[in-house]
Structures are given as structure tokens and as C-alpha cells.
Length: 445
Image 1 (tube, rainbow, N blue to C red):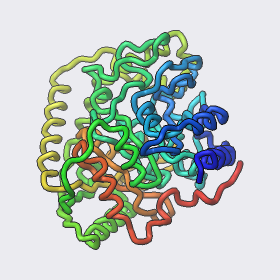
Image 2: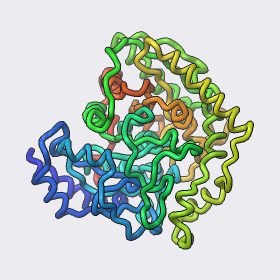
Image 3: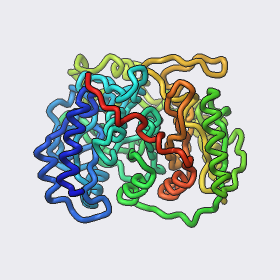
């Protein structure tokens, strides 16, 4: 298939799925023009979307917010530039939760992103638009961001793969916000030394196959390759983080069985992530003041979504590094050392993505005698984020009610491609129904 044909097919899919609000900007003529001059390279002819938090030169880049309705950056984010140099073609800016705040994707700028096949499920957030764009086949991959699960959470909801690279392995330049950002220059320095977000947020990838993730991360990352596979993996059910449903437990058991059938040695790692969620939550609550977003919205607060205003109101007005913060950092370092030591001699640790499978917008779920909602449903994702390790969300099945379920493959930074190879090795012999399940059943509203 020629690149031009692929573009026309993608544009047709985009029109077919326009009802689900996955995109906030697509210029069909610009996509066609870029396709004709796409460079030769690893990603030649691949179409990709970009989360609206990341800069694309000359294209509206608004962080999902009406506050930045007139901002068009002059340069690409580093990850975008690298993808284009490898021959990929930019397709459009995807709808995301405003400034990346939210486990769903519903904004005044782009509306609510709708699940392509299930009215009762949310496509998640904050990268919900990208997940839909990938799952529906509009694009081959998406460039998005992950702090507490913003790639891996929607990837589970859509039954696709989502990679959170190890911290520092993909440059974060080009993100809306950051130290020094204001309305005249909305892109600031990514790292503010007192913020947990600047320590843990990464630029990552979504795709319909682990192989495509490997191709893309090979282009985006500063380092790849960390030795040969050991043929050994660890596994924890994540109950040290939060309870899991029977459906998730069954799915995890299936992955362990597939691993053993594939000749892998599987060793238990019960309790490996103990205290990780508590440290993450404490540090995020005490350190993330969102001063950059306050500055971007100054004088235009009425344009913000109500959920964004709630996040800003709950943020600390002044960051104070007291004994509680120091204790949390000490715990975080202890957790990181424990997991790093445990991974020596292993390819990865397998852990659930969440206490349950995909959920509806604002849904409350009963798991293990507890009522879980909101960010509680991202407990396992947040615990893994604290480690700074690479994590690949891998679809593994569905619950009894058909909700997609995923697990995370977690490894040291620089082994992202090895995690992708491991995911391919772990695939069920009957996994063709897992990725982007039901996406051939296109429908309009």
C-alpha cells in the first residue's frame, strides 16, 4: 500500500469516527502534503497523532484548554521531530484532558471523548483521544505523556499497547507548561526541582502491537539495548498496592501460564511494590503546586473546566519540604532500590494495570470489599510510576462482562524494546481478538 493510499484510508476512518471527538485538530491537506515528502526511515509512511500537550510546529497546541486558544508553536517537540525525521507523517492533535488533569477525557475545547464500541465505558485519560485514534486504526501510533498512568490507563480501556519509557529516556522538551511558562511562551522548562511531575512524567507511545511500539521507541529514545533476554520474569498480583478483582486475577494467571508455556521461568515477587503508592500520593499532594498552569490561566480562569479548577484549588499554595515530604522521599528511594535489586537477572516484573478492567466515566467499582473510584482505580499505575522504570501496558483479555483487561511489564530504563519482545512472547495463541477489540464494528451517532 502506498503512503498516499494509507493517508486516504486514515482520513476516511477519521470521518467515520468523528462522533467520538478523538481529535481537536486535523488538516487533511497538510497530511496529504507531508505524506508526499516523508523521509525514508524506520517509520516511513506511518501516521501518528500527538497529544495536545505537546508542540507541533505551526499547529494549534492548546493543552486541551480554551485558555491557549491562540497558541501555535514555532518548533516541534523533540519526540515529534524525531518521529518525522524517521519518516512518520503527523496526522493530527488528539483530544486530551485539560493540561493532563483527569482519568477521563472531557474538555470545553474538544468535548467528551467517547469509547468507539462501548457506550458504558470511558476511553480514559488523560490521553483518551490518542488511545481512540490508535485503536480505531486512524493512526499507526500516538505520541503522548504519562505521569500517573495517562498512557497505560486509556491503553487498557481500548485494548491496545501503551509504553511508559523509563524516566529520562525520551526528551520531554515541547510540553505545554513547566518552569517559566506563561501565556506568551506556554512551553517552559520540563524540570522544576520541587515538583514530582517533573521528576516522573515521561513522553511515551501507544500502538496496536508491541512490535510497532518497539519501532517507535527505537526512534524516540536516547538509549536502547540492555543486554540479552534472561528468560526469567517476576510476578506480583499487586495486592500490596490495592485489591484486584477476580477478573484481573484470572487474566494475570493466564499471562503466567502463557509465560511458562513459552519457556520462561516465572518467580513470585509478592509485596514488591509495598509502600510505593503511599509515597507517590504523599509527594504528589505536597509538591505539585501547578504554578505553571496557574500562570497560564491567570485572568482567564473562567475558561477552565470545572475539574481543572478543582485540581488547582486543591494544590498546595506553597511547597514546604517538611519531615513528611522527606520521609516520603526516603520511602520512595527505598522502594526503588528494592525493585531495582529484585530485577537483577530478570527481564521484567508482571503486575496488573489496575484493580479492575476498563470502567465507565466516574464509575465506582467494588473490589475486595472496598469501593474504588477516580484515581484509586489507577493505584497500580501510580505505584509503578514512582519507580521511574519502563512499563508496557499489554492487553491480555476481558472480564466476564467484556471489559478489556491489561497487565504491566515493568523493566529497567533502556530495556523498552526488550519489554516489547517479551510482550510478543507472552501473547496468547488466541490473542487476535484482544487488540482494539470490536473496532471493525464502525458506527455513527
